[in-house]
Every structure is written in structure tokens, then in C-alpha cells.
Length: 360
Ligand SMILES: Cc1cc2nc3c(=O)[nH]c(=O)nc-3n(C[C@H](O)[C@H](O)[C@H](O)COP(=O)(O)OP(=O)(O)OC[C@H]3O[C@@H](n4cnc5c(N)ncnc54)[C@H](O)[C@@H]3O)c2cc1C
Image (cartoon, rainbow, N blue to C red; front, side):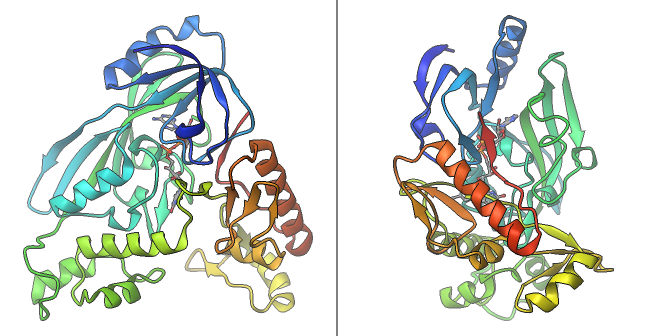
């Protein structure tokens, strides 16, 4: 392990701002992460753990030590006829791990294809896409406590997962390092070609567990000619849709959705609906006491889509994504985010909450 000084983070985070870390070290194995913790009492400066840097906004240089978690390894812990329990180290690339699971015929993560970042960060904000959240497949999360150096395994229930939320984003933020994550995935026999129609009995049941009802997945599968969907074709459909709809950070700096979709109560909903009859909403419980409102719609209604100030902007097709066209600073993006939050509050009385971690 090398401790380097004044390291540029430009290529290590997807917003691509030119910022540097005062000190930088990369932990390439589980034991290197633990070794670093042995020196924690000697480090009297802020510490930042970084995965793929796809959910952070740096407002300036980081005046402490950045520890990049890059530990690798995928191990099957347990397997029976229907399920596999597989542990992936925190530094595994998320999408490569999803691809690996799909190739093995393990279902559960295919709708989460092409989300940037590392496995270790996936539980932190309970990543989600196309009707699936990672919590649905997580069995446990292994962490090490930074102040005591003690390891602990959190069960799924102990992770307190919620919408883009978990205990690691709240009480334990900055207090633990996620070392690895264990997933429980369904085994699906995909020996049949997906274009063969007329699957019978349990094969139909297996396929019906695939989540196809969100977004344009069914339409994309039809366009692909995938009449009997498989985990492979669902992954391909999700990748196709994402390539069309989301800006590629390799071309335009961004961190995906900048804001969470707000959830409002029934009383607020009843006040807003007559004024904004076109407002989309999604009931959150069977009793429909709360409703999720698409933040993209709220931002669009305030006229922000495609807005640009200097090199900071709101994406032209997806108003939930704030972008760095090249030379924006983090403070400029943050200022834009604050203006958007203010205008949404002025118009709808709804508070938007950033999904991205602002690092100052
Ligand atoms: C184009 C694009 C599309 C995206 N689409 C989605 C989407 O569909 N759904 C979705 O949910 N998200 C999406 N995201 C957001 C992002 O990909 C996820 O939040 C991802 O899980 C972040 O992983 P990371 O490794 O890059 O985390 P980082 O950005 O490196 O870190 C995020 C936070 O986690 C902490 N952290 C990272 N690793 C560890 C660890 N091992 N232990 C302790 N703390 C750690 C960091 O300190 C930081 O606070 C998207 C981002 C982009 C750029």
C-alpha cells in the first residue's frame, strides 16, 4: 500500500471535478482495509472512504485522507437447489458483479444492471432501479467499526433499509467500512432458448418471478424479440434503456439522480391535486396514506430542464440529473441544486432531498 500526497480525484469520481486529496491510499484487499484501521488512532484528519465515486459531489479539495476501497473476491457461501448465497467484496465493480450473477443463471440483480459504483456502496443507499431494490437480494452486510476495529455482520433487517436509505447512510455514516455483502439469489435454469415459446409449468413460474412491469422493460423486450424473457434478456433490456436515457459519465460528468423522489402525506396530496391535476403520484402503502412524487416532474414544472449556468447544468433529457459540462466546480453544482430545491418548495411546498453525498 502506498500513501500518496496531493492526488487528483478527477478520474476517481463521476462528476469529474478537478479536486485533489491531501492524502490518498488504495486498499486492494480485505486485510489491507483492516491493516489501515490499525493506524486509525494516528490519523488526526478527516477520512473519506471512496468506492467508484459515482454518488459524491466534492465541493473542493479534500483536506484529509481518501481511502479507496478496491478489495476483490466473489465466494459462494451456500447453495441448494433453488438459491445461492454469494459474498462479494466491497471493491468489486457493481455491474461486473451483476453480469457475473446473470452469467451463472442467478436471478435478482438483473434490473440493477449498469448502475455505476462498487458492491460496498450498494447497501448504503439501497440502490434501486426498474422496480427492484438491492435490499430484496441482500442477506447480510459485513462491516468493521472504525473506532474499535471490531467486525460485525448486519442481517438484512438490521440494515434498516428504506427508499434510497439504510442505517449506513444515517447512524453509521462514516463510522463503519463495509467489507463485503452477501446476496441470496434465485437459480434459474435458462438452458432453453428465450425465443422458444410455450414454456410449461415450473419454467413459466420461474420466469414470472422476473420483474418486468416497471418502465419500458416489456416494450424493450418485445423490440428485442425476446418473447420468453430470461435474466440475460432483462439485463440487456435494462442496459439498452439506460444507455438511451441516462448521460454517460465518461462523456458528461454526473452522479445519476441528484435528488430523491419526495414522499408526501395524504393531506398534502389532497391540497396539491386540485391545483396540479397532472401531477403523477404513486401510493406508497396499501392504505395510501403517503405518495411518492417524481422529483423529475417537479423540477421540470419549475422550468429547469436543460438549464445551464457556466458548466453546471440540468440534463436536457433527464431533469433529475445535474451535470458538469467540463469545468464546473462542486460549489457551482451545489448552488444550482439549492436554487432548484428553493423553486420546487416555492411552487409546490415540497422539500427535495439530495441523494448524492456532498463532500466538503
Ligand atoms: C450515470 C449514473 C446512474 C446512476 N443510476 C443509479 C440508479 O439507477 N439507482 C441508484 O440507486 N443509484 C444510481 N446511481 C448512483 C450510484 O451509482 C450508486 O449510489 C452507487 O451505489 C455508488 O457507488 P460508489 O461505489 O460509486 O460509491 P461512492 O460514490 O464512492 O460513495 C458513496 C458513499 O458511500 C461511502 N462508501 C463507499 N464505499 C464504502 C464502503 N465500502 N464502506 C463505507 N462507506 C463507503 C462513501 O464515503 C460515500 O459517502 C447512478 C450514478 C450515476 C453516475
